[in-house]
Amino acid sequence: MSIHKKTYKKVTTNSLQEMKQNREKISMLTAYDYTLAKIVDEGGIDVILVGDSASNVMAGRETTLPITLDQMIYHAASVVRAVDRALIVADMPFGTYQGNSKEALNSAIRIMKEAGAHSVKLEGGSEILESIERILTAGIPVMGHLGLTPQSIYKFGTYTVRAKEEEEAAKLLEDAKLLEQAGCFAIVLEKVPASLAQKVAESINIPVIGIGAGSGVDGQVLVLHDMIGMTHEFSPRFLRRYLNLFDDIKNAVGQYVSDVKSVDFPNEKEQY
Ligand code: KIV
Image 1 (cartoon, rainbow, N blue to C red):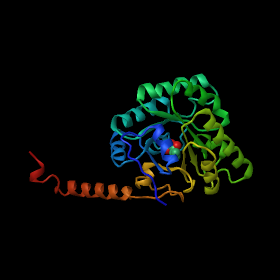
Image 2: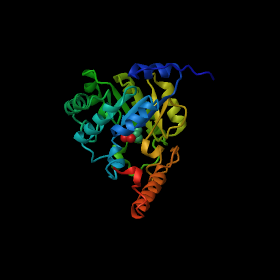
Image 3: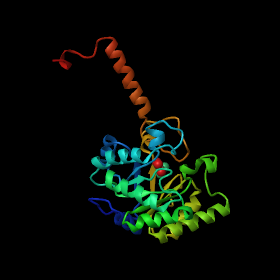
Image 4: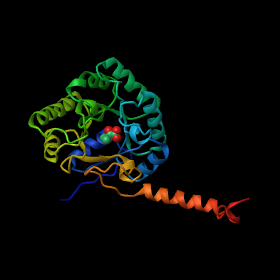
């Protein structure tokens, strides 16, 4: 199949819509800091997600629930300073948008104003529709997130595949349509059967970006630290590791320790 691939100097929500129409797959990765965001942007990624997975990856917490709005703004602002091309999406943390649309709007405005992100992402469907609609009234682009929504981990109990049963699959499809109607520019679909994910992508006109959702969707997202092998405890089936930086960095540190101990480092050329 020949694939139309347009060059985008800057990726916007409109570019993503065009990519879906042109059947060009959308690439998305997380970043939480200036240095890695710069590398990811120069690598040509379309979308950078400042994910609340920073709670796990950067802070070593068990879930995404504890990360605060101030912490997300700090991470997002660091990423914004690094990026020239990619569209930047910042996660709204747990507790800043559920059940209170006014608080949702205020939280989203803080992310846009203080961090300079281009858009926000919220987890959930019909339950948070009012918050999504209120954020959209301020002209803030919203990305949805359905399927496995890690902020609800204590409701689900486990991180296993979602929507395997008909009832949950039907609700998910309905939620995806609701989010499209509300005006979301894209939806992340996490850890659901590939056949369902493809059905969702074919049923709505906004891009569906999958993680553990198969190849029938409009794009893919991974957590950068998993994809470059900086983390190594986490090995779900959907993860492809492109590097093994945990071992590479560990070996480099070991070599440095040995060079310092043996007074091999610094040598004459490495001093003044
Ligand atoms: O926070 C995150 O990294 C995410 C991705 C898993 C999509 O939401």
